[in-house]
Amino acid sequence: MERNPLRDFLEIPYDKLEEMNLEAKRQRLDRVPADRIREEREKYLQDEKRIKAVTVCFSDLEGRFHMLDYDKKFLLTAADNLTFDGSSVRGFSQQAESDLRLAVDWTAFYWLPADVFGPGKVLVFGFVEERDGRPYDADMRTRLKLYAEELYSRDGTVAQASNEIEGFLFKGRDAERQFHVNGQFEFLSTGGYYHSLPGDALRRFIDNSAEVQRALGFANEKDHPEVAPSQFEMNYSYAEACVAADQVQLYKLICRQVAQQMDMTASFLPKPVTGVNGSGMHTNLSLARGGCNLFWDPSGEDNLASFGWSFIDRLLTSANDICLVLNSSVNAYRRLDPHFEAPNQIKASAINRGAMVRIPLANEKSARIEVRSIGPDANPYMTIYTLLKTGLEGPLPKEADKDLRQSRTRFLPDNIYDAIRLFKSSRFAGELLGDSVQEKFADVKQMQADRCPKALGALIKTAEVQFHHEVTNQYLWSRF
Image (cartoon, rainbow, N blue to C red; front, side):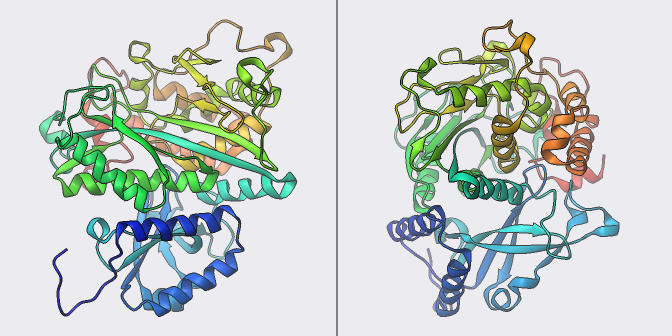
C-alpha cells in the first residue's frame, strides 16, 4: 500500500497474520479463561501504538452483520459501557426500549490484512446485552455460545461445525442494490464446475479471498468454481460451534470486500438467477466427548452411531417447524426446487443429494451429518443453535411413524408463507427460541414476504432481491 510519511499504522504480512490468528483461535478452542485473554488483548492494544481503531461486530436476528469502529483509546477506557440504538436494527428492540449494550468478546479477536480492511485496525466480536447487562434474547450468538458452554460443562461434550458456503460473483459493484434498476445480474464466468483458468476474474477473486481466509486462521482446505455460472465455494476446516458461526460471517464479509475491490459483487442470495443451480450453506455437525466422535460407529448403518441416527430423527421430526430458520428469505424457496439438485426431501441418505440430511463417507475422525437444506443467507448462529438443540433435545418421531428414514417421502415448504405459518404455530419453535424471539423472527420475515409477490412464479422478482434482508438498501426499504 502507498505509505504516508505522516502516518504509521499497523500492517502485518500475511504469513505472520496467519500465525497470530491461529494462535488466538487455539486459545479459544482450548478454553483459555476469558479474563486472561482480555488482559492479553488489552495490553497488546495499549502497547501497539500503530493501531487506531477496533472494529466491534455483532449480528442481528436475521443474520445481518453490523460493524462499529471504536477509537482504540476510547475502547480501552469504555469497553464496559458501549451502547447502541437497538430500535434501528430490524428484529431487535422497539423504539420505546431502544438502548442496548455491546460487550466485547475478547476471545474472538482477529488481526486483519491491511490491504483489504485498511491499516491500523483489528476486529473483535461482541455480545448484545440488555441495559442491565443481561444477555439480549434476540442475540443468537450469545444463545449459541451459552448452549455450547452448557454442553461442555454438563459432560464435556464439544459441539463442532463446518459450513460449505456457496455464492455468486457478478460484474459491477452493488449489483444487488442496483437490481431494481438493471433487472438482471451479469455473470463473470460461464465455465461451470471446476472450469476456471488461472488468472481469469473468477479465479483471481477466489484466490484473493482464500488468501485472506488463510490469513485470518480459517485453516483452508479447498476452493473452486461451483456448478452454476460465476458460482464459487471455498472450504475450510471444522471448529467449535460458535467459532464456526463467526467464520461464516467473516467468510461473507471477506468475499464482499474482496469483490468490491475488484469492481464486482459477491452475492449470497440463495437463487439470484433463474434457470441455474442455487447456493446453499451445507452445515456439517458432529459431537465429541473426551476426544471420541459420538457419531462414529463402524458397525452402524452408514457407519453412524445410534446416537447420530437419533440426532437425525429429531431433526427430521421438526423439519417443518424449523424450516424458516434454515431458509429465511423469499428467495430461499426458489432453491428448494427438485430440478436443480434441491435438498427438499425430509429424509436422510448417504447418497441421495435431494435429502435434507446427508451422511458423508467418513472415518472415526470425520464422521458427521450434513444438513443440506440451509440457505447461505440464514443466520449462522441461529441455524447452528437450532440444529444442535433440535438434534439433542427435540421430539422424536411418534411410534406410528418411528422410522422417518423409511417412510414415504415428505417435502419441505416450497414458499415462505407456508414456512412462516408452520414456524408460528410450532410449540417446539417457541420452546426452542422463546416466545418473544419466535414472534419477532416471524414478524420480520412476514414484513419481507409482504413486500414480495405471493406466487413465486418462474422468474426472479425484483422485490425478492430489493427487500432481501442481506441487501442493505435502507433507502429503498423506507420508500416501500
